[in-house]
Length: 117
Length: 109
Image 1: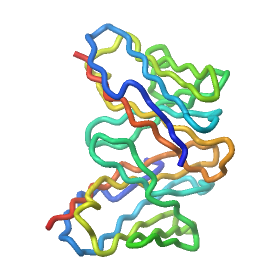
Image 2 (image 1 turned 90 degrees about the horizontal axis):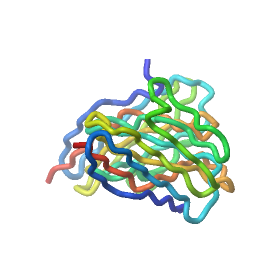
Image 3 (image 1 turned 135 degrees about the horizontal axis):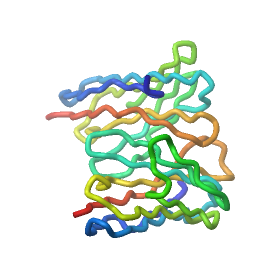
Image 4 (image 1 turned 90 degrees about the vertical axis):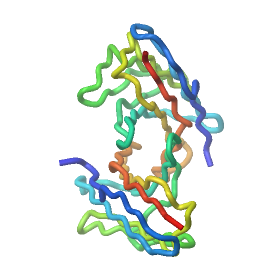
């Protein structure tokens, strides 16, 4: 299957700092990538849809100035959590759909566990 | 109303049991459907796609009922290794996947 790599897999930071998470599609091109957040024992919640070369589309209730998304190429999207606070601690997962496959399936990165102290 | 609603669980079953999960979706225009498996602290992994004709993969059977807008997953002869959270997922045709809350399954010896 298609491979999506996410980095870092875990990060601990102090409150007020910014954290960048990278999501790469390794063996396919992805015009669209998705960023999800998952709190313990809860489901994946879509935060935003990242489109290559254009602004991301954010879900209702997600602050675009706090969660900066950049999708500069067909294989890379980044999520930056700005001025992180303890309530931002969560599991962040990116996913992508492959251009050349019409299955509707999403391929997920390994996830990034953020802990804000 | 949530876009995708799923049996809350948890399901605790003995090895060898048959267990079924159901999931309903609200968008009648949804185009493709999936079951994902998520292990603790890991990313979801595709278990199987779901087709109107129903599909089977070993001990797993998935069904889609478009008229009633629900999908199901049946696991026969449960194994300890089946313990995980099962997420139903609905794709609305824009590669926009919406997930159910997940159902936690624990298979006990």
